[in-house]
Image (cartoon, rainbow, N blue to C red; front, side, top):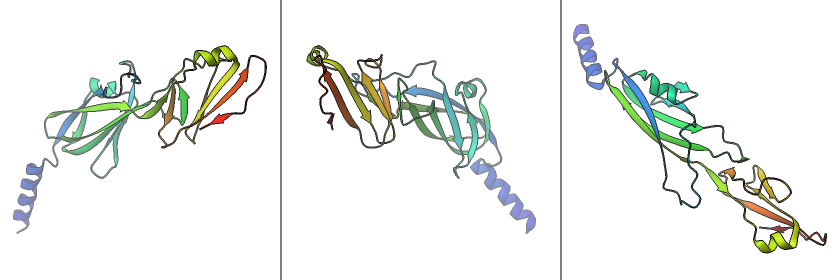
Length: 193
């Protein structure tokens, strides 16, 4: 009876692929379905951190640079996995610092090179500021501060921030405050929305 039980287990392992190993290769592509007016493009030179999780959500492997896994596929036990990719660290608010992320499920099969393609998309909110010609002509100082509740960024004619792109972690809210001082030196009450 003991021999039959062992033979049965081995046959089941072979059918499910348990005990076998395969190889995982990961490639990334960018999601370009956002409105082209506001689209930020992930540079091909960007590096993405990869984390590979098993079916119990345990971390199996991590890579600081996704290109490491392209150069040398990872040997894994034949099983389902979840792979995540993230660019740089995501702060609450930063200028010129888009954050991209993506995730996919993959099943590694025994004695096979399995390819997983992750689609990475912009994962934070992009904000730019534009001031009308009237404001530029009638005000010597104009400043716009935008906040998501966790962080804030300020665009002002007093520094080089006007042409910068602001990126905010998605908190579900954005508020702004406009501060103005006209050419005669009169400071106006802040406008907040």
